[in-house]
Image 1 (cartoon, rainbow, N blue to C red):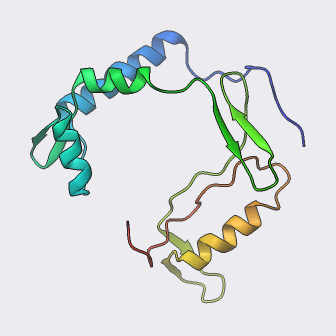
Image 2: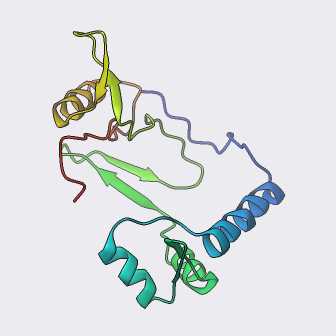
Length: 146
C-alpha cells in the first residue's frame, strides 16, 4: 500500500488557521454548543462553563487547557498489531462517518442505518487496500446513544 510521508498537503496558511481558531473560540464562548447528555453538561458546568438558552458556553481557560493537553502523536493499533501513527507530516485515508440513513439496495428506499449495516461496512472497509483507518461510516439508530 502506498503511503505519502511528506507534509505536502496544505489547505490553509497560518493566518487562515488562526482565523478559524478565533472564530471557533467565538462560537464556543459566545454562541455555545447544545449538549443533550446531562452528566456531561454538569461536568462542564463544574469546570466553569455556563448555560445560556439551553447551550453550554465554554470558557477560554478550559479550551486552552484542553488544547495544551492534546498529544502530538496518536497511535491506533489493530488486532494484528499494525500501528498507525497519526502525527504531523503523515497522511492517511479514512471515510467520513456518522451518516444516520442509508439507501437500502434491496428495497430501493432510504432507511435508518442499523448496527448490522455498521458491521457490514466495517467488514468491507477492513478489506480495502487503500483505506488506512476504518471508522463508523453510519450511525446505527437501532441502539441506545449510551
